[in-house]
Length: 433
Image (cartoon, rainbow, N blue to C red; front, side, top):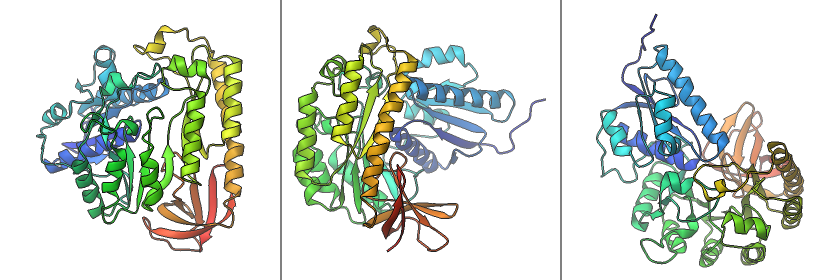
C-alpha cells in the first residue's frame, strides 16, 4: 500500500561533494526562501533535490547511492517528487535518465533558473549575495569564480563546470558585507582555481586586488584561501597576506605530484624544480605559513621510482597539512586514453604509505604547538568538548582543537584564546587561557 507523505510542498535539499556544492545549495535555498517556499537542508520533505558530485569514482558512487535511496523512498510513497542537479547530473544526464527513471527531472550545473521553475519558483536576479547558510553561522564559503581553464589530464571539472568565469570584485565585496551583517566572521575563498581569478574580466591576475578590498569589510576577522593552482601563482598575493592580519597565513595549493614524468603527463604546466622554488618563496616571504596540499598516487605509469621520489619529497618538504587521493580513471579526460596500469591494491597501499608519512609529520608539528596560545574560532560543541580551529585549520579537512566543556563555557562562533596542553596526530587539546 502506498504511504502518502504527511508534509506537503516541503523541499529537502541534500548536498553532496565539495564546498562549491555547499555554496550552490545555499544559493538554491536562498532563492526558494525568497519565493516563500518551505525549504530545508537535509531534513524530511516530500520534495527532494539532490545536489550531486561527479568528480571521482568514490564521490560519484556516493551520489548514485543517495539518488537510489531517494528513488526507493519515492516508490514507497515516502516522498512525492525527486529532482537531481549538480556535477553528476551535468556529466551523466543521459545515462542517469535511463538507469534511474524514478527521478522526475535532471538538471545540470547551470540550470538553476529551470530547476527553480519546476519547483514553482522564479529566479530572482536581484538576490546577489543572498544565501541561506548551511554551515555554522560564523563562517561561510565565498565562491569567487566558476569553472576552470586548466588542461589537467585527470580532471573532469571543465566537463561539468565549463570555462573559468570570475565574479566582479564589487559583487564579491557586496556578498562579503551581506555575510558579515549576518554574523559571519570567517570567509573561505573557493573556486576551481583561485590563481586564475580576474584574467577573464580584468585581463590580469587579480586575486591580490580582490583581497585588498575584502579586508576592508567590517566584521570579517579571518579570510582563508582554498584551491590555488600552483602554475602562474600571482606572487603579489604573498605581500597582501603578509601585510593583513585578517588573511590567515594559510594556503591550500594542490600540487598532485613531484615527479617530472608524472607532472608532464598530468599536464600541470610545471616541474619539480618550479614547485620547490614556489614552496621556498612561500616560506621565505611568510615565515610560519601553513601549506595544505593534495597528492594523487597511482596515476597511469607511476613507477616505484616515481612513487619513492614522491615519498622522499613529502618527508623533506613537511607540509603542515596534506591529503592523498588514489587516481580515478575518468571518462572523457585526457588521461582516460592512458593505460590505468597501477592496480587498486597498489593504489591503496601507496595512499596508506603517504598518509603514514604525513601522520608523523603532523604529530611532530603538533607537538611543537604544546604550550603555545592560539586564538581559536569555536565551531561547535560535541559531547563533552567544544571544538575549535586555529588560523592553521580549515573546517572539515584540517585539525581541530578540543576544549573540555565540563570546565569551561565558551560561546559558539566566538574567538577564544586557547593554550595547547596535549596533541594527537591530527588534533590539538587545549584549555581556555
